[in-house]
Image (cartoon, rainbow, N blue to C red; front, side):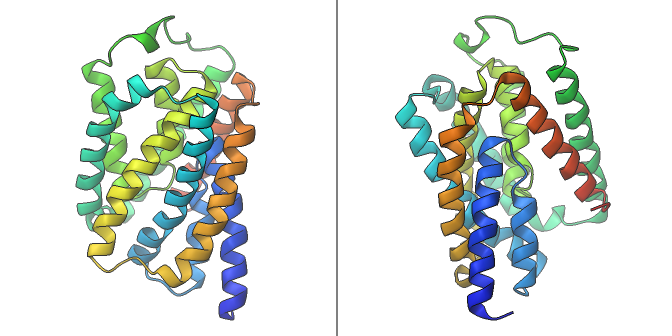
Amino acid sequence: MSPAALAALGFGTGMVAGWVNVVAGGGTLLSLPVLALSGLPPMAANATSRLGVLSQSLSATFVWQRKGAIPWKLALRLLPVSLIGTFAGAAAAALMQSALAGKVLAVIFGALAVLTAADAFGLIAPPAPGASERAPGPATYAVFGAIGFYGGAVQAGIGLLYAYAAYRLGALTPAQANALKSLLTLVFSVGAITVFVARGLVHFGVGLPLALGSLVGGHLGATYANRLPLRAFKLAIALAAAVTALHFGRLI
């Protein structure tokens, strides 16, 4: 594949992945194969994909802020623990690339798919009214720290985890959950890329077209994502989580 064709493919894939990531999550599963086509080894592809995640999150966060959807009070409480987890996860990334890790992640996202689908059909009680106004408890900090660690190490599917955790633990609306997810993803992407650039793993030549496409996709996703009904929001997460589980289970 010529450099021009690869750049065009990267831009198109980035645009789709950016939209998917902002609306629900799992778009990285589209961008990683494109980076693999460029001949990057797994760790370099993992690191370079963060350029797209960074650009789409930046674009989406700008749109969410303009709409007033970012729950800043909650975000500022969760950002430090999420960022600490991100640096730890990025530093431990090499240890996460194993067959066992793939099976564990398949189980995690499979469970998330079932849980979110059950939630969408009213089989799980909704978050307590007013929960978003209370200070996060230890469990919430632990969950967001763990998600940050996972995002620093692997990235794929982190939007699903952030979105559902924001909805369940933060008692946020779909728009607020997506806005918080975009902001947290933006911050942890900066942290992860800092670590990966220092290791010489980020390949800007192939990553920049992907990042440009992701910037456009992120903007479109944030512009239209708040039109999703609550059930559609949950089902979108469930579907993306199921696809992610199948991917990590080596079934797709």
